[in-house]
Image (cartoon, rainbow, N blue to C red):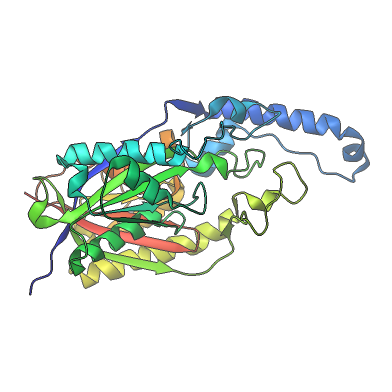
Length: 375
């Protein structure tokens, strides 16, 4: 008995209307720094407290390649007295914020595929930070879309979407579903420490959706999933300790590690070779010449990391056509980054072209999805 062949039928993207430029971000951060240093002038002068250092546009762009980021709640993020998101808490009978943007991305994917909610069997909410433990965000999204089936949340940090794609593909191969939505609502502004010079510029908000289906029901122009490969290795170099067992008030001492923290140089040094090796090993298993890949849709975390990974895979430094960037305008959007790149930069590929969707991040985690444009 032949197993159903999984494909990507369509993708969807929700982009928040508000955006913060590096110039705006630096002005806010430096105002905070000036105020903090003035309030603690005496211990700083006595040498018992270290003065905070200002940020700069040049520092941010050299460190990351990021120039702007979209956010769901701009004003409080730029207020030096707050520098954190502030949303109205919604009642239990209202659609959650995370579900709201996930539904928007999912509806676009369904529309692009010419699909109705009744055609979908399952919803996976794959994201790095869930709004609550339960009920699952995926089930709320399923309810809002009117899908009869099953749904659950999954979290593999920045690799959540690619892990979700493999999970959906496996359900289809096993015959447990024929159409699965992988939704990644990433409100990463909530876990970012906007007062940390080394990371205050990294993240942005967004939501993506990927419709994975059996090939015999997919629309024309779909993407065949040639193979997927996942890998995890435990590391403390990217970590977020927030949770119901160890909560801390945002303004209390010791709260910094309840937000995003990382050892950036260690991450760069350890993750780049791991990702490149996994891609090359999987390409060899699939009998794909990595240098024949038409396009790489890599995780949008750091321009330098993407440049090195692409060079190791393709054998030369990739140009913007071979490895497109959305990092400059979206910032790091965690698991959604590689999907945004695929969504915005895949329509021009021809039938038979092969490409790679790849994400990597905390865990460590790496997820790769090799695809080929169908006729």
